[in-house]
Image (tube, rainbow, N blue to C red):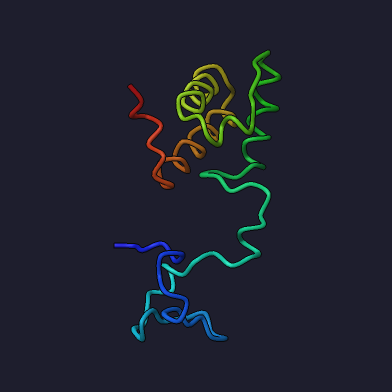
Length: 116
């Protein structure tokens, strides 16, 4: 179970200078560490890279289709539709890119293929 850090007493968390830290005196897996300020300040955090989405956008524009990059980051139904269109109507490179993006969504736990 992951407990949000704001619910823990202030003296329970010891970040120290190393990437490892403890909660209540017990070591915690480094993968569960909270995001640092630098990570929180990133302009976009999504299941797939913005660069790849912009490449997909350019490919779909060449086919006469619109693509909203920000919407691809939060709307799973829209993302599924745009990736399916790119796969069905694009050339080999656009098909490969759409498969890579689809896999990226799946690895991130977005499961865009399970939309009802």
